[in-house]
Image (cartoon, rainbow, N blue to C red; front, top):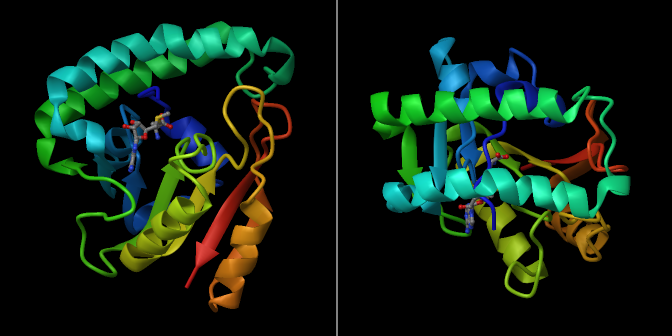
Length: 218
Ligand SMILES: C[S@@+](CC[C@H](N)C(=O)[O-])C[C@H]1O[C@@H](n2cnc3c(N)ncnc32)[C@H](O)[C@@H]1O
């Protein structure tokens, strides 16, 4: 799996985040080398980032460098499945990634307490520690035999334990952007458990058809 560096501007768009959303206690789960926490906290916000990769920072820095070429290869291999309307150009996308990666690395050095080692489905946080948890490009994106339907249910249930609202983007598989076969069943299961589960359109599209997020609530 790649350890990527998405930018605050990308998070704002694909999770449809407003200033009010960013004003509370926010968890970026599977944050990787994203510049989200660094940028929001620099503006006075309260974002915590969690990722198992924070347990070994030397390996993380190497993975961040490796993900640059890995991400480009993935897009090249499925070029017809991507649209550049939001980014404008590959260079525009790369510039965002470079800025986010530099912001992440600087903030990791300056505020290491923001970056907590840990992972789904057992996050190292108390119940109700956050108002909002966001998850970008782990859940659904990397669904496979390990991250299967039962794992996703456990992971999202743990996110709802620590935060009263959970937003997840995207809802398709990485690469070709195929739909996730178990997503409708999972939504029904959460609703049957008394949760709110809504698929909401967002003002962002890169993988064609991947323009929706999941919003879960208690
Ligand atoms: C593709 S990256 C996404 C990073 C960031 N959210 C972004 O959009 O740029 C996926 C991240 O998921 C993390 N990850 C892997 N297993 C995880 C788990 N069980 N719980 C939380 N994060 C996990 C990886 O370490 C990696 O940093």
